[in-house]
Amino acid sequence: MGITLTPQAADHVSRYLAKRGKGLGLRLGVRTTGCSGMAYKLEYVDEPNSDDSVFEQHGVKVFIDAKSLPYLEGTQLDYGREGLNEGFRFTNPNEKATCGCGESFTV
Image 1 (cartoon, helix red, strand yellow):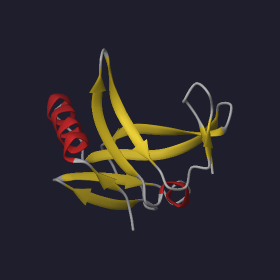
Image 2: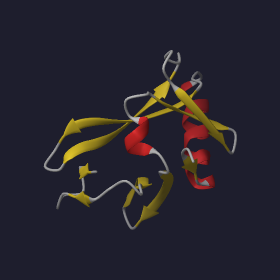
Image 3: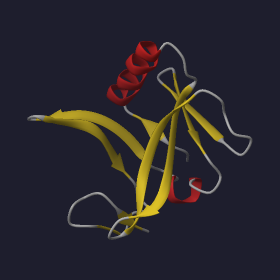
Image 4: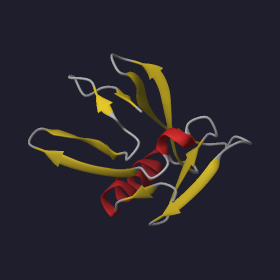
């Protein structure tokens, strides 16, 4: 199943990689934190890890470490603006609940 990127998310990542002047793609992972237990983490990848799975869509590579993949399988990453707010949005079929502030989730 993997990870999917919308064209808007891929465009945003491509622009930032170009602005940085380096990078292979985007790392998507999870970390333990927050009210509900887990939170998403995003960072640019300059060097892949040996345990990474790599998914590519719209010319952008997404790297996910083996520990995070089970929690992220089937996730769609989108990017958009709503009023004054803009950012990535995650549609994760594995999420069972999110905290009230929207910063963390549980599976």
